[in-house]
Image (tube, rainbow, N blue to C red; front, side):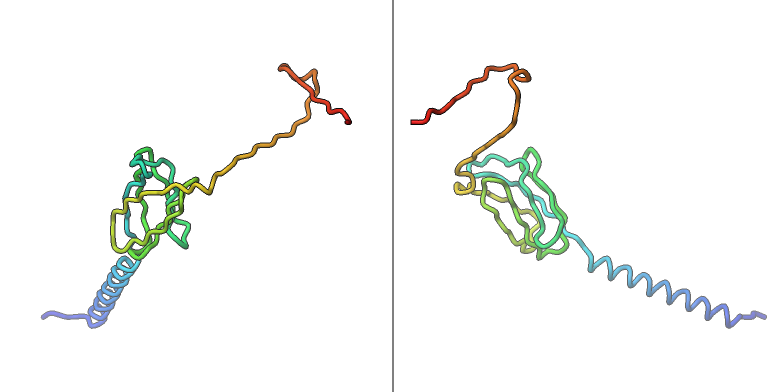
Length: 142
């Protein structure tokens, strides 16, 4: 004679249901929160790789820079992300990912950015503290 305990079968059924629901929720969250990896190379107009170009995902704090070969790798939150390429003296470019996993960029120089650089320094020194030549210019009242 075989005895089956009803309470143990109900308990087993609840454990299986809990396991299936937990597995379903885990798979759904993994599918929703997938990140996409983008790779590429940033070059200038002459074809030389650019070192230290800042690459950022628009409207996030996610970013990276290019290495000595001009190559980069960045993980973005979705396949509809927009990447911003920024380097001093070059035009800023915004490129939509568009489902691509590899984006090579050619940056153009921006000649209006650095027209003149003026450096002004002020420091008070006494003649006894300085070991180099000193010259003074005095103006005359005309």
